[in-house]
Amino acid sequence: MDEYVEHMVKRKDSPLWKAALAGAIVLTLILLFLALQYAFALLLLLAMCAVVYVVWLFSNVEYEYTYFGGSFELDEVLNKSRRRKLVDTNASELILIAPKNSDSAKTEMGNAKILDYSGMGPEDQKYAYIYVRNGQKYCMYIEGNEELIKQVRRNTPQKYKSY
Image (cartoon, rainbow, N blue to C red; front, side):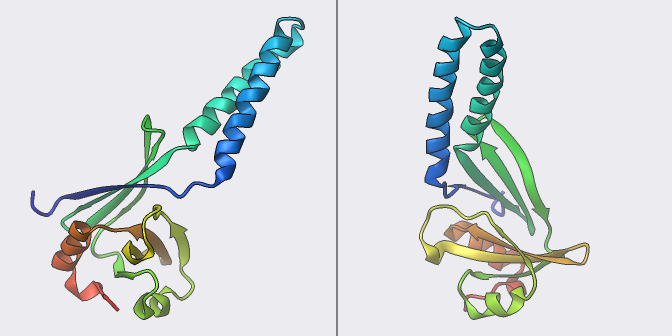
């Protein structure tokens, strides 16, 4: 189990999520008072409750990175209650892992589709994880801790660049 690494980071959230949640709750309370007087407002109240649930669910997102023996999995944890798998790669798909702003990452990126799954941490802990799947190149920004990067270097040393 020395090769198994799990790391969680909180997503960078826009302040709009907090404002949207506050606005949805206020609107729900207004519709609650209207539903006591008008029957049609009850349907609007039920719809607004669903909107509040969805906004609440997506207002607190964490990313969980799991690395084991060359395979990398990325899960999205929604408000500590739901989990969904976003990415599952293996060592054969990996092209390069390097610091986000390094020259080797910038040259290898090319026309890759960029996916930002990094957290709120410092820029020097963010890495570009570049891989190919079905002929399409992807560049995933992740926030790696020392243990995760150490295991990547151990399993695929030729694909790790520190510059």
